[in-house]
Image 1 (cartoon, rainbow, N blue to C red):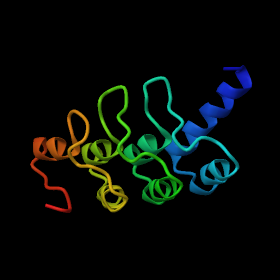
Image 2: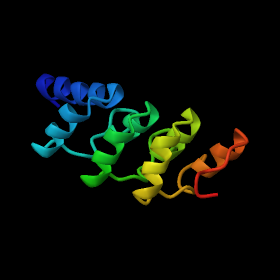
Image 3: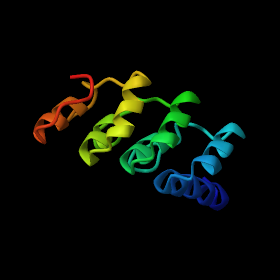
Image 4: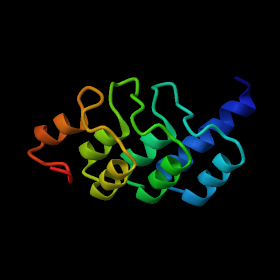
Length: 121
């Protein structure tokens, strides 16, 4: 990957972390890969979910992001949202078809660890 491509990817990951929905979705709509992943296997959706950006999560899912993509740590975006207790993101991901039993630990297992129930339970 060229330095310019690495800088562009880093900018996209930063937009996902900070929740700049308009800027990131504009880049996706212009052709950036919706399932772009960093060196740890975290996708744009994973980062947006972990940082609590429900609108961005919804926009990425609507554009075809894999809601069950497992990161290098074995977790899905849903498990990250459960861990961080972002209930609005959890609801968006479940509505987009995320599997609460995917990954290790799964979102369901993560919720149980914290004595919580998923919104569907």
